[in-house]
Length: 171
Length: 277
Image 1 (tube, rainbow over the protein chains, first blue to last red):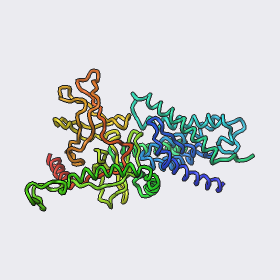
Image 2 (image 1 turned 180 degrees about the vertical axis):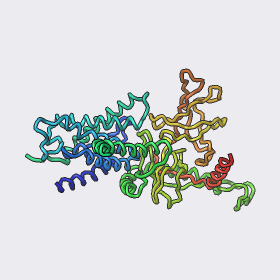
Image 3 (image 1 turned 45 degrees about the vertical axis):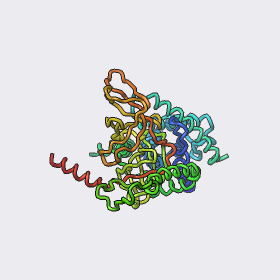
Image 4 (image 1 turned 180 degrees about the horizontal axis):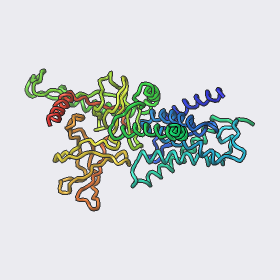
């Protein structure tokens, strides 16, 4: 257990640095603002309490905020998915519950499950983020476009990282 | 009382979520609307350290281009030196000039981190409080206005660029001094806006827009851009004007921070008037 959290801590440092120093500096277009760090929240163990998830999401978000000069916006969006995650996981629970030795990764849960799961949370996260960033109702189409295009890029990045840094938990 | 505790326990999760949300959104709106950047940003010591390390690697990519720009600016400044002028009247030098007193001094700094595609865009520069930089100082590049300082640490500062919401820099038309506030609508990093321009004003495409001074943040006459487009809005008797900015925000590597030596005097004087009223 401790070993897993140590690994998670190293992952946290690595991913926040990659997000802050590399991905934030990819400025291809104003529609593309890919985010890798929500993966840290998606990859938390299955049966983690709401309070723990919230606090971890807050720390992750505020660290990314520091690197991107967004003053709490990333923290706000990641706390939203952190707050919703335990509830939504409860709704999509398999009949005999989650196997606690597994992680919600693409290797452990299968591509279809992981794709649906991460698309749902990334959509909530990005929509919240861009709505507050732009904060104008007459620009709803711009918000949706930014959400959509960034979501595709974030998803690609997350899947890429799954294959580089994670293995299946057991075989 | 017990009922209250039961209620609180039941809604503990939601309360924690709610309180943390209020906290972070409070930080966000404070920075956005009142330019009060607190807590974590790229000018803080820890994050700044990482950002500086990154910059030490990436700065070499644009070195030759940057050398060319600096050489051009050096040439322009050298043309203003006394040696470049042929003296018509012998040695007429005034060392202690009683007519002109320096009001603005420029502190040069290097941009170590920047964004230009977000709604609010910030630069991090490598000079801070120890380099004489304070909050709310203006920042320019060799081409024109860039933004103003919102946060400083010992060695770094954070600059809010004019590519942000609610910056409201006073600008004016060079040829007839009509003045407005500069805004940015968040779309292109080359175009900024001025709203509510009266239609009876003599304004045409290609006119130069410069800073107005007044707040003491910038001297009068720093270039802002040229008028690109006059847009008529339905039902309004005014133009909305698009301005093509003179600074290319995706290629700013060196900036000057403006220290207004009279700023304190101006602030004190203006506060005195406000207090009397």
